[in-house]
Amino acid sequence: MFFYDILKKYTTMKNNQKKKRKVKDIFLPHELNNYSSDKKQIETSEVPIRFIDKSEGERKIEDTKEEESITVIAPVLKEKLTKKEKVVDKKFKILLGIFFSLVAFYYLGFVLLAKAEVNITTKKMEMPFSGTVLVDRNVFATSFNQAVIPGNLFVFKADETQEFSSTGQGKDERKAKGIITIYNNYSTSPQILVATTRFETPDNKIFRLDSRIVIPGASTKNGKLIPSTIDVKVTADKPGPEYNIEACNLPDCKFTIPGFEGTSKFKGFYGISTKAMTGGTAGSVPLITSDDLKNAEEVILQKVMDSIEQDLQNKIPKELKVLPEAKSGIKITNVDSDAKTGDYREKFTVTAEGEVSIIAFNENDVIEYIQAIQNQDKDENYEYCQKPELEYSEFKADFNKGTLRMLINAKQTVCHKLSSDEIKKTIIGKNRKELDEIFENNPGIKEVEVKLWPLWIRKVPNSLKKINVFID
Image (cartoon, helix red, strand yellow):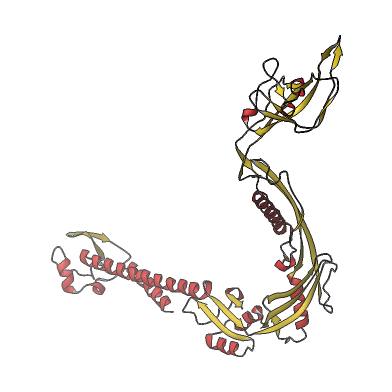
């Protein structure tokens, strides 16, 4: 109403300025004399004329037939009126701006941006539970009477092969080997030589027969003895490259038999070699130790277990619970190596195969069983509001049958039933005093916090959409 009166007065003032005024309504007699250029008194009753000054010292007189009075507007007075109009116009605009600002402030603060947030902590109770449950892979639904829940049996197998390096050092003491042709230039009778029989070179290097042999008897022709021969394998008496000798041929070189020395057979039995003796060595070479094989087996078995563990994480559904006690130890089905302790090898390979059995179950089946038992004692005004704290112990697993028996201790929390929608309908439009009475009379509420925004509003908004209720 206040702004309406101002607007009305402003409009009336603007209209009055447009009307023609009489001299006596505007000037005093001495003011008219001061502003008259000819210093003569103006008589308004005789001549219906109008003076309009456009600039100081200049007047224009216009005849008019419609008005009987004279209106004279001097420059100074005109300037005063103009300033007064501007002041009034500026004040009006300021008041009008304040009015609309208040309207916008009210709309934003009390309508558009208004909201309420209610945080409620309900009354809670703990219901303990303790009992033995059997997880069985052979059932498909929970038996509440027999305390049996369905389970799953998984068997994961893995095989791994890896190459390893030996860490030992051994002497590469190998004996030279070759072939000797033995001559019987002694008699027509055969001659037996046992294994390891010695043959000696002119520079006293000894080679031994690898096995027992029989030298055939010589033949005769025209009364002359023709020697018989036999090729045999021999090995150097000692290791080393010095036994890698060149071919030993008559007449410069021959193998003699030291065992016949001092007898007539010494010159009748001898040997030659048409090819060099080879293979004799004496140096340091890689050697496979017992620790090498033991460490390699441990590494490959761990690799098998890691592979099985990876399968466990990737292939068992996420909703299933796997307890450490529900895993069998790794069963090694095979461990094999292509080398043995003492082998002169730089590299060797080990292969292992193993398997692990696992019994898993859905923990929701356990919770469902516990709550079914607790329903007999639970107050109907309370509901299960949190996942229970579960502790498993006293395990007994049978991986052949696929069963796991265990003791379960649980703490189940129940909360007083509250409906956020009902609370919204109850508190809509209520002030803080009314809110206190509502919440104090609700038996299910332990603590409550009400936040109204902006800070100056004192009531819950009248829109359900602007009310948020959080229940813990």
